[in-house]
Structures are given as structure tokens and as C-alpha cells.
Image (cartoon, rainbow, N blue to C red):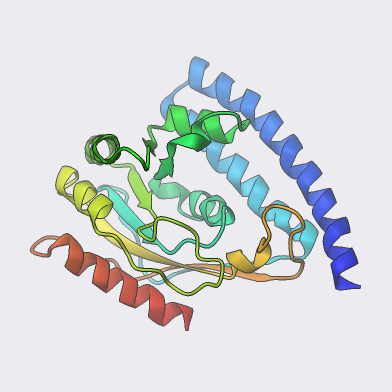
Length: 243
């Protein structure tokens, strides 16, 4: 019975998902070309809030907890575990006061309404995983940008999604570049739970009635620490929260 319900509710949500992307693509174009970068980013926040809360269609229960008051007068480097595309949707909405901009694979910058446009216009680091030099330059550019704008960067050090929820090793390279180019940044771990259970087989069907959570953990001051030390502290904090 649940499988049948999964297919029915998923079909309704995906129709909602597609229409939302199309509508907000136009809204983003207008905001970017006729207003300001911050106005564009606010339209992106509304887009992701709509996609996230639309998951109520499949009975998802959403939870956000912040264990710290985050500053808005300095950049933040958010470090999160990665299970699903919905990780990003939740982070953009719940962390919208800090304007998170993502490190993303370059393939996503074309062909997807709203999402590709935002990646190109937001200043996201669009990395080619086959070209290490290009990836480092893109992440360095993002680091410099958040240092100047006081926006934030978001990175998944695992590199790829963990469908099981078990943490993969964290790679320090990207985080190290961000810390170097944004020396005033604060590092903040984010533990994301059960999003992988929502779409274990891709976008269709979604699994209904899952409990999804995003938890902002205690910040890490990177000054005086190596990137590896920062990553180990972040990974340990996330792992404890996921238990």
C-alpha cells in the first residue's frame, strides 16, 4: 500500500516541483536583470522554501535546529554531510540570512530551469571534477567573494552523496582553499539526516512520510588550525549528531 502511495504522492509533488522551477526561473531573471544581487538571492530563497515545504505533499516532516546564533557580519563556511539533492534545498532556505553559495559540479549549470540559472548567477563555484586546477581556482574565487560580500559558502567535503547516511571521508582541499581566501570566515558544521531516505532511487518515486532534519552545530574558529584539523572537528560533530 505504501509503495502505491509513494508513486501517487511523488507524481503530484514532481508536477509541483517542475512548475515551481519554471515560475521561479522567470522570477529570477527579472530580479537579477532589473533589481540587485540580494533581490535575486531572496527570490532563490523563496524558490527553495517552496520546494522544501512542498515536500509536505509526500508527508515529509521537516525539522530545523540551530545550536548557535550565527553572525551576519562575517562570512561563514558551512560544512555539511551529503545524502540528497534536498540537502541543498533545506540549507538555502534555513540558512538564508547568511546567503549560502554552493560549491557544485559544473554539469548542473546547464539545462535545469531555475537551478542552473541560480548556479551561474549566484557566483557558485562550478567545478570540473576532471580538472583539479580549474576546481581550485573556482573555489578560490568563491572564497574571495564571500570575504568581500560577507555572504557564505557551503561545501560537501564528502564529494558525493552517501545513500546510506554513513559518513564518507572528508576531503580537506576545498575547505582549505576557502579558509585561505576568506580568512575572516567562521566554519559551521551542519548535520543533515534522512534526506537520502527520501529519494533512495533518484527523484521518482520519493519515499513518503520521512522525518528530515537539518541541525546547525557549534561553530569552529579556524584561526590557528590546519584545514585537516578543522575538517576532523566538523566531521566528528556531524557524526555525533547523526547517531
